[in-house]
Length: 177
Image (cartoon, rainbow, N blue to C red; front, side, top):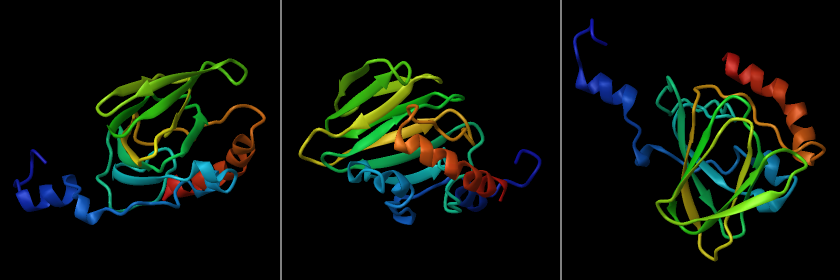
């Protein structure tokens, strides 16, 4: 933009994402919910497509990371998954949740309690998940450290990992668009 005439109107169109223009996407992770109804949660994207590579044209184009919010109904579980290429940040906006951390598919799952304005950053190669143990809806911000992260994997032998293998070709076709 430095070599062009600066237009605040164009800048706003390209770099501002307003809540009033967003919708909660309860379907982006529906493939997980079909395996276990406790996995039901919603995402609202702001910057980039995220690891799901959802073809949402109503986002700010990411250059270095993705940013979205998640709604976690009471009892909801964001299943353990691993990003091999990026760190992932969960920043709790509202509610009480439990972060789940696992070194590999066969090790112990560790639980870390988080409250509003707590943050956890999971490095690449570590399984991470989230669970809302409360009676109220929880909300969190999710940030991934790449524009097009690799599709996450799930613990070996899990139903989600088998489904991921099937869906990986679909995702690659979406990313090419």
